[in-house]
Length: 76
Image (cartoon, rainbow, N blue to C red; front, top):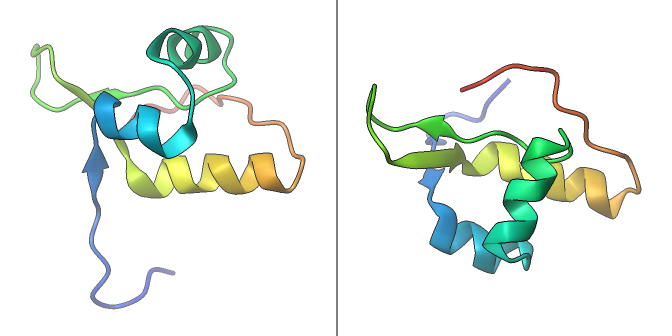
């Protein structure tokens, strides 16, 4: 259950690169392999993509604990 007052925050690629320490090309390769969360469209049929910061934080936690992330096919 989420804490009261918490908000969802969307991060874009520029911030994501800084947060995870991987190059854009590495992030996209990991997405293709199913080893990194997929982005979602910020506007239907638009070009802008983003990730929920909570999702990226969970991915980082998995990495810290030595667990392998596997994309379960859920988007957004």
